[in-house]
Amino acid sequence: IAGILMGQALPPMLVTRTVLPLMQQQGGGSIVNIASDAAKVPTPGESALGAAMAAIVMFTRVTAIEAKRNGVRVNAVTPSLIDGTPTAANVLSDGFSKSLFEKASAQAHLGVAVPEDLASLIVFLGGPDAARLTGQTISVNGGISAF
Image (tube, rainbow, N blue to C red):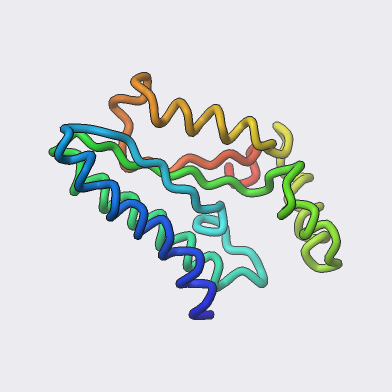
């Protein structure tokens, strides 16, 4: 459990803490952290991963509050399934994970996300059109977590 928590939650925190002072000195910037919908949707077999993702989401929100006075925006993107990736291929090779993937895919009425979906959102969040967005967590999942 400690390995999952440290290996998943710590890297975005360390990167943020490295770049944030530089962005604050220059009077602005945008940080986009990547977590997963495991932060929002309880999934059997993902308790430690869900805790790590929730830590990233809360870290993002708190950092957004701290950094906004210096013009720095901090948001998070929480994909669920991303088709066409090595992780998706791994998930589909395991019986239990494959079953979860298939169930979640059926709930993605707008389609399972592909890497380009995430790239477009991340570019938007990092750019000037998102100048008023900070502290947000956006799911890219075809509607899986839209209850």
